[in-house]
Image 1 (cartoon, rainbow, N blue to C red):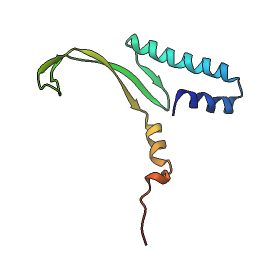
Image 2 (cartoon, one colour):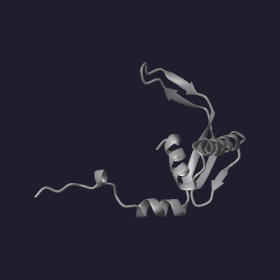
Image 3 (cartoon, rainbow, N blue to C red):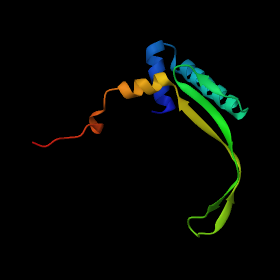
Length: 104
């Protein structure tokens, strides 16, 4: 699913113009991004938590040359799904592609 798909679904359900829906969705994503950049946690009730954490510098290996390199420290984003989201995902019906086929 893309951002355009989200805009289309919200447009159909809410009835605002696509331009207004797109602006609201852009602002939501921008707010989440800015909050995470500031080191704060984003908690969306019933969906999950977005957080950032610091990864320390470590030694690694260049896969092409095999030379040892130092991977710089960096911040990474993590997402932990809420119990409600986990439950909804596990109760969702299987897609036809995911169902095994049997031959008679």
